[in-house]
Image: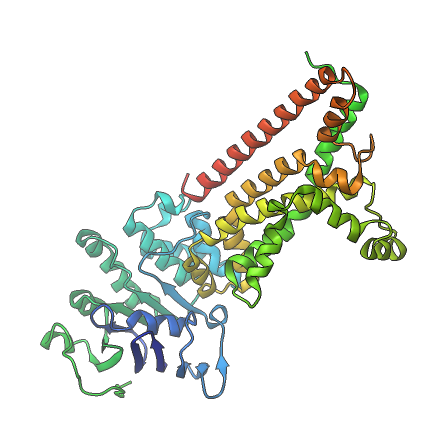
Length: 238
Length: 231
């Protein structure tokens, strides 16, 4: 259970996002520039909100009023970024093992085999990220985030840098991830088709505000959220 | 062919020793200062910047003189070190290490700083989300990614230290076997009537060592860069 209520002034742009998400995949949906990635960076602990609170599974990760701020490296929140951000100097195998290595989790061969099988990256282990295709890179990035045993997985436009064919290659992996990995996910996207396939709930954002939050059926009515939506701080059903 | 006297060989080996030790001792400081200058903004940073680059623009004799009046046997810092720790730099080869290190420091810091500034910081963010605390991010991501620049900086500093003359001869003089480097030996020979023939042999050695250092630096940096980008 994640509860977010954050404010931040980003130049001319005032971000104020409040929403909650539970198990399954919650999409953070909206046009580019809506502030989705900024919210993700705040949940991950990479950007500090000006005001507000972030609570994950009862643990306060950030509370401006109480001066609580848990460092990114202590949050155990896995991130998959648009550009993958694999470490270029490490092999795929060492990229995958990095999170475990850094947080001192003992090696688990079954888990490693399961994740590499799920994402179909077992044959890439000895390669360097520079020798991977865009789709392979994103699958390795997803595997790397999963293997650190995150409490929450943040996927920030993981398919945005891929062409249509690659996207449809990876979408099945994301669906399997949602159904099999049992890690709650926040999935950021501006693509309604992607969100319909991957997400179980949708939070729409526009101009730095949350405009709606509900089940994924929201997207069948309107392809893009309209301006001035229902509420800036909706309470979604658990 | 090359015929070097025993004294020439002493100067060559001493130069190599001084330049190597100066580079190795300066390297951790160079990396630390490059990191601070590349990443941190603080009050007085332009001044620190200027002080570090000063040996690059000052006449070497001035740098040597400044070392002499701070680290000399009777100078405040030098006397303190000598009395309390028994460390003496004046007229010792370790003093030459200091002057060579100081003179080559700006080149080292500049090369490392540029390579740190070129690192994609989003990779460090990614490492943090994977549970790496800042010190581990530095050793597992920042340092390896800056490696080509660190090699380049170290080799530039080594080559610069090898050729150092003005500051060294001012600070620790020109004592055969203790502080007489290749440069100082060549200078000495050219001051003696008919010594220029003997100087030529040392000149050839100096050229060979410098070329070798630069070629090795280039090869190492290429290998490090290739390791970073696939392969």
